Structure formats: structure tokens, C-alpha cells
Image (cartoon, rainbow, N blue to C red; front, side, top):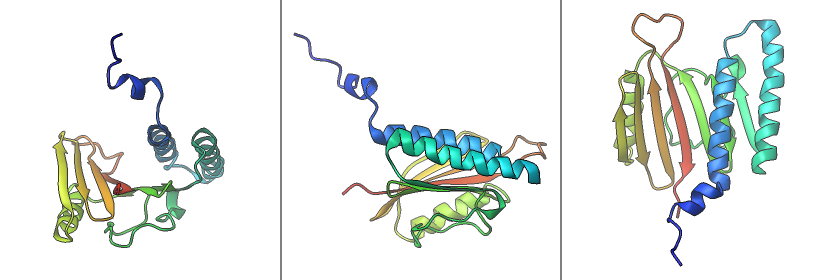
Length: 173
């Protein structure tokens, strides 16, 4: 009998970690899109935020914390050794020992500065991608793996600002 393709099992049954990543990506998209609102919409956004938390918790069995908008802050337990830009995050969340945060930044140089600071602190560059409007850096330290994504608006687009998104997860031991 022919053995199944090595990836067949992972494709057929998503692992909880993959489900959490997918749910997190959906949550981030919904919450960031809901971020530029008027006061009435902000009340609705609070309901969206709570609803997203509840859905992710039900689907993954994980306890998460989501923060959005002007009152967002880094999630409790954010590693102090991970540098962040000035200002408050537009979105943040914590789940299963990992963290995500998105900041509005002045330009892509902010992502480069954070990446350079992590390297100076002993983090090792595992990957780097430049797709024009999006730059991604993946670094690993002794305790944390950090993925930084800098997203730039199209040239001439004044309706959106550059952003820097962090995905911080424990290094598997």
C-alpha cells in the first residue's frame, strides 16, 4: 500500500496552532478595519471586539485578550525585551503565550530601526522579504521569535498610514 504524502495529514486536519493563526489574522483584519470610526461606531466596535474574542476562544479553546483603537495597549505579559515604536498600538492581542500588535508608524524606516535593534540585542535574522509596499523580517532570540511586517500605503495615498505589525511567539525548546 502506498504511504500518504507527508503533508496529507497536516492539510487534512488543521492543528490548533494553525487554527489560532488563521483566527488571529481574521480578527486583526476585522478589528483594524473597524479602527477608524466615529464615537457611535466605537460603541459598535466594542461589541465587535468582544465578539471576535468570543469566536476565537470558542474555535480554538484558547483564552485571548484583544485591544483596539485609541485605548489599545500592549497585552499583559508582552516581553519587555521586544522594542516597540513610540505611541500606542492600533491593535493588540495575546493568545497561548504569543502576542500580536500593530502600530501606526511614520515610515518603513521604523521597521528597519526595530529590526536593527533586535539584531544588536542578539537576535538572529531567519528571513527577510521585500515586496515593495510590504517588508517582512523574521528574527529569533533565545526566548522569542519575532516577525515584523512593515506595510506602506501606495504612493500618493494619504488615506492610510504606514503600519508595523509584530507577531511574537515563544521559541520552541
